[in-house]
Length: 517
Ligand code: TRP
Ligand code: ZN
Image (spheres, rainbow, N blue to C red):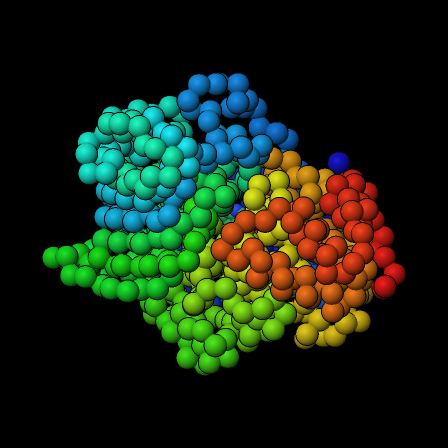
């Protein structure tokens, strides 16, 4: 294979470097907790103006499918999923979770987790058993509505048998007591360690997209079943524990502290996170004033916003995207900066950034990318994992919109045309049909963003931005499919758009951009 140049998503730049030939994707570790802020970037090629980062490392072409058994071939209870063709065993039909309370005691020294998950749900079918996705940790006890219940484990399902069947429409409560040492797992869909990660520098945090949430708490692990969350995180005094949403209490628990965090809007399981270690919760007053919502970050050591150049623009970014996409969908935002997972991830109201990315030339691109996901991905979540371009294409287009604001429409057109040419000869799969073993390949991001640009050129700016806003508003706190988005774009523009979307999303050839309509 001849090496060639290919634009890769800035968000995955660190990952791509880690995947280049001759290296294995290990985490970056340092031996000191002192944070050094490099003044120059040490990552791949840098972009200074219009064209996004181009790297000369091996392109992130799709990887060979891993040799695994077909999980659907197993049959029986363990194979029952919610019907996602990319993850046949994930999620469960038959009930709808409304709230998770995760009571977690964590000892950073030993890595030991002792947890109790309380799951409030409503049956949508008559249930003789409740199947929860759960893997890796040991289950000690299960209760249903306060009474002990029988349980068994089949593959990655925890099957709970209530004393009597639960009728359709009935609310019920499951409690699961569990313990063990959570850790990294290999996703079937992305070549990164995901799950409950240990940085090796004293930090512990969760990155779970797409399929690792059930390695740290039991639940209905598919974005179709969103729920609100309470986190009660007990850690030794002097250690900070953060999670999605609002910090509502810090309770004294002897020589430990219980940090209580509340996510009061529905959240997909893969966006739930915790961040534990030597961190400071920093409120940025100036950014909050710009954004019109509180901006709070979880920063390593005693660093401040000023130590992370670019971060001071976060509030401006929220304000800019609110103009284009409609009101910011949650009541606060911020990022956590952690060592060593090789990328960034849009956890709801608290995106995670690898330290290396936060000190790279791409930091601003990725800041706008992850905050854009709060609208597209987090508030509006994909109905099926095949539709992941609805997350990544939209967030990548936000990077182009930020460039347009900074440098003008001409720069946008030149940059996106140059990038289209690179992808036209890259031979990646089309964005609407990613391989299940490489769900986050570069086409999903970059050709996904080009698909939106082609729509914009076809329907004009007014109908285009109206479509983006209506999409965020109509599917807020819910799920959408490609069909939902196309339907809305057709309704608003009055133009038949099937051919356009078919060509951009499903044709292996990257189409030419249409002439502005
Ligand atoms: N959604 C991430 C982004 O912003 C990419 C991603 C998916 C990821 N799964 C991940 C990053 C797991 C780190 C770990 O583009
Ligand atoms: Zn993304």
